[in-house]
Length: 236
Ligand code: UDP
Image 1: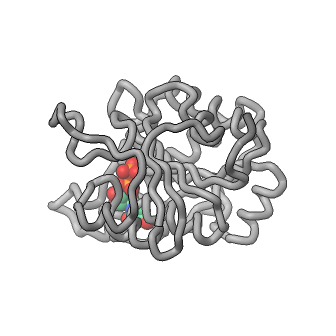
Image 2: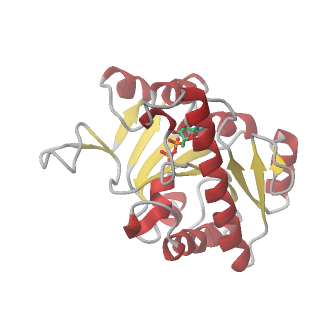
C-alpha cells in the first residue's frame, strides 16, 4: 500500500505524550509515537508536527491568573514537548527541526514558512512549537494555520482516549454514535467538542481535510496515511 498523502500536519495533543501518567511527558509513549513518525517519514511522506501543551498547562483553565500570561505559559509547555519529541526522533536517526512561533534562538529556529517548507522538501521532520505565538488561540488552530500556510494535504488529529468524533462523549455515554464522515459545519452546528470553533472555521474556510483518530492503538498514524478506514474524516 502507498501513502495517500504527500505532506501532512500531524497534531499531537500534549495529553497524548503523557501516556499512562496523565501529565508531563512519558518517555516510552513519546518513543512509540516517534517510531510511527519515522515509519511515515520512511514512506516518503513529508511530516510536520504541531504539539499541544495540555499535559503541562492550559491557559483557560487557570482562572486566578491573567489570561494572556497563562496562555504564554501554555505556549512554553508546547516548546518542552517539541524538544522532547525532537530528541526522541533524532535518537531514531530522523533529522528534525523545531520552529517556534515565539523566538528562542538558543533552542529552536524561529517560525519561517519558506524555511519550514524547505526542510520538509529535504526530508526533515518539522515540529512547530509555541502554537501560533498568540494568546487566546489553541494548538488545534495552530495546526489549521500551519496546514494552510505550508499547503498540507491533510491534518491528522491524533487523540488520546477517543478514536474519532462522536455525537456525545463516548467515555460518558455508552450509546454515543461515532461519525465516519462529517462536515465542518456539522461540528459547529452540533457543538461537537472535538475542536474549538476558531480551528474548525479556519479548516472549513480553507478547505483543509481533517482525519480525527485515536493514537492509543499502535500503528494508527501509519494506517491512516495508508488510507485505511480509521477514525472520522472531516471535509468542507
Ligand atoms: N496556546 C496559546 N496560543 C496558541 C496555542 C496554545 O495561547 O496559539 C496556549 C493555551 O493556553 C493552551 C496551551 O497553550 O491552553 C496548550 O495548548 P492546547 O490547549 O492547544 O494543547 P493540547 O490540548 O493540544 O494539549
